[in-house]
Image 1: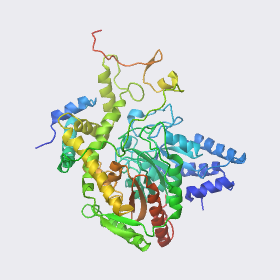
Image 2: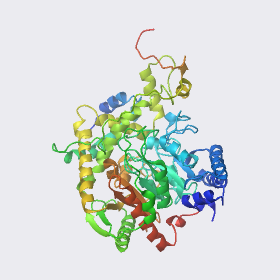
Image 3: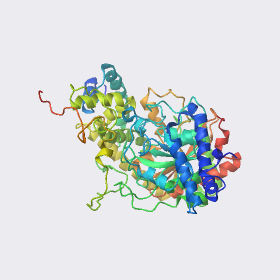
Image 4: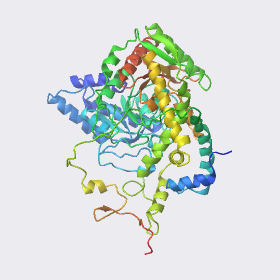
Length: 99
Length: 496
């Protein structure tokens, strides 16, 4: 039985914001199925009594004083933008309004 | 001996004493790059003018009587995953082609402060995802030992540049073995410091709980000097540790193992390992014993689950980290013709800008984090992470360091594993446990495999903040082997 179906891969591609072709979906469905089949072994040893580790080191939030410090100028921040208008990032329409 | 064959420590001393100028040293390496990089493809960007300007500044400081650090004026190749204000930064991806970051990574800034001369940016698997450098959008890097083979990855441009004498030092990042594996297969030294010991600020993120900057060099002392130069606490990285840098340079100079307890990881060997790799590894273990170390076998039963756990944890973190590449604020934007929504433009941009391995990992991570699958995949992998840390803890009650081969095989041919992700992932089998637990680990050359005459690496793993032990043991092995070989292993490499 496959671990992941082609429809699921298409759904993952949508969630991942990846516009994939039909051929790519077929290709990735096969590969992801192989990989997921192999990595599923982790559940063999992951018993209820073992606490999960999200990190290698014990960490707590780190704070610094809330002080005004020099930062990038608008010109520096916008220098690599694909499109700029009025000192702002120009982006395609975000809301699905009818123009 | 020509300048390009000298060690970083020797070059630093020659420059500090005024016997050679930093400009001469930089020019010799730039000439070498021009000569051999068309064959190797280690560099994505060569910064000749700025390198010479940095070198001139070091010479002027010396002339003015300023004291210089041990690496002032020494050239370095910098992995193209660290941001550099004055050079493009691509992470090996089309999505960042031509991108110029507005700030320097902390590692970059510290290289500059130490007076290191940055020659350029080196090739890598896209976003550091891979073990061969074949996943770069800018073509593969070739192994100087055999141009038909991979130089390891993801830091393959950095390993190849040092092995081909294009630079005495380079930087890398190690998330699952991306420094140690390329070092092993090119016959050089590569170190993954303790997680949090070197700053991630300005390192383009792949898997934030694992990513660790570290050094490459042709010998252990040079690696230690570079490690010391860019490591230490950084307030810009919230996972940076508040501890002094372990005494790595002193340890590299000490180079003795008398009385040290060395554990051989029982689980790493046997099926899937190349005979020539295992033969050189066993000789290295015997050598350690003959140098006065106490060698015992140690079992780490969970290490066999490290690879599957890693290929859930790293993709999960990458699926989140790479969401920032949306074509809105920097980098590539595709399909913005006024008719498409932002969401459509993002999906077209990411489909055009990312290569196959990055897409695979983003979808794999998205899957592992989905509701309904989270507990079985990501949750289980996090539990394995706990088990790995417990195995290390138990092992380090018995021994001071653990050793294993760095990689199961020597450098494989370019193209051999390109369409088989699971085969490619096996290259990281022995290196991943130290990433999951945050330990320090180094790879040092331990000879050539009989079957193919290619380099084999010895991995030495130490506890968290035990980085100095890696250098101490690595330097002892290096000294004994170089006495036996009559010089460094790299002298056996074919000349380019």
